Amino acid sequence: MPPQTAHRFPTHTLALVSNPEVVDEARRRRTFAIISHPDAGKTTLTEKFLLYGGAIAEAGSVKARQGRRSATSDWMELEQKRGISITSTALQFDYRGQVLNLLDTPGHRDFSEDTYRVLAATDAAIMVLDGSKGIEAQTLKLFEVCRQRNVPLLTFINKYDRPGLAPLELLDDIESHLNIRTTPATWPVGIPGDFRGVVDRLNNQFVKFDRTARGSTEAPELLIPAADVDPFEHDGWADAAEELELLDATEADVDVKSFLAGESTPVFFGSALTNFGVRLLLESIVDLAPAPAPRIDVNEEPRAVDAPFSAFAFKVQANMDPSHRDRIAVVRVCSGVFERGMTVTHARTGKPFATKYAHTLFGSERETVDLAYPGDVVGLVNAGDVRVGDTLYESEPVEYPRIPSFAPELFRKIRTTDTGRFKQFRKGLVQLDEEGVIQVLRDEDTGDVEPVLAAVGQMQFEVATHRLENEFGAPVALSPAPFSVARRTDAESAAEIRRLPGAKVMERSDGVLLALFENEYYLRRIESEKDHLTLLAVLVD
Image 1 (cartoon, rainbow, N blue to C red):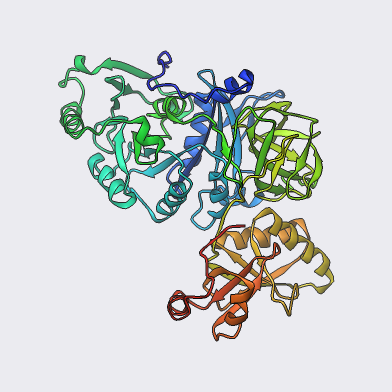
Image 2 (tube, one colour):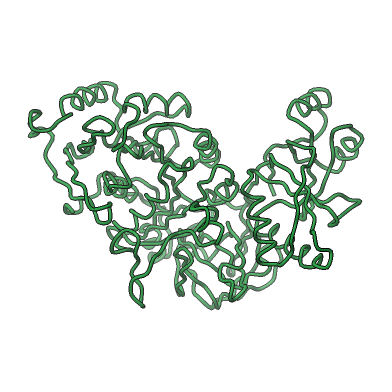
């Protein structure tokens, strides 16, 4: 591996505050997520980041006290059977003197609601695209969430070692679909499928790649100043040089200000499988991604990073360890210092919350964490009352805005096929609902006898039924529900909607009323004819 390069961008600064230790630690943090369409290579890229960060000695193995062992970010039995990521996981590793918090997200096309929540805890994101496909449906959906949350976005065009689209065609695809300016930070040398290296436009160097066995170790790189490259010795250089002249002429240069504003996306080319281009992308996470900044509370006031400890829960997960049947709230530290054993206040209930058992999470592996700073992610064990979006704080009260959920698109009636297990069935539904695995809707007349499950994607139903049957011992059956679209409503509108044919009003466990309609066409008609009704697509909890 070549020597580490110096910072290639201006370092990020935070406002002057009174606790230098917290500010210094916050400056060292980069908290980011990876989003992608299924099979674009997100999980492979995650593993290669860990390889380059020294968290694993070679791809597929992890350093641990008891020696090497296999490690992935997927832990549920269903994930292992399917070979896909269903749940999100937090991974922390050091790189170039910085602490990187990587929030691994679900990539399956039918399970994206958890990804929405994870993006609320990030300061930046990497969008991974398959070089042969460009922008896909799921990519577009996740990009819109990033845009709504003002998350700065880097783009990694993966699988360039395979046949695919031309690089200029890929840039045009991104700009036309996402309405964002592309600013290539690296540029490929060689055609898709015959990948020779990239030009690092920031250092004006040709980075020539050599393969490693199965991509298990860092890719050897030969660095050559661009001015010294002999086009006769390097296939593809002449074409790359012409394209680079075009990029220079159009001033498609990486610009930190527009990147942080969400107006442009630095683009990187590579192959996560062979490790080509991974180092340059990781370098730019350190250089480009913003450090944690003051977070805005419900009163629209910023809470300084050195204010007393505060955090919010973006994920709740039970039974990660089936032998212990525990419940973990995964929180993002927003301000101050987290110290294991401290007692904090649970903002929603006003009750004290003990933090005796706190872990960092590496897939299914856990290590006790004693200290954490803004940007870090901590798993709090035995968090029975904590729900997604809840705020925890010490001494100085604060509450952060709830994480918005999105209107469900799929609906199924659910019942237990063993009436003797109804108690377990009801308990399981409550827990899955609190974790945000699925939205459970109840009719005011029938209650828990035959509730309706509402989801963003089909996979959520599979996860819910799998866990009900395997964790709670409650066999269940699903049946179609005659709805395909939902909107949040209020009590006044609900009374009128209940009188409409082809519509129904059901209640979530948190009291939110959802109006369900048989199809999108019927909803649009109702919205047009009855514009006084409250019908909201984004369900702010």
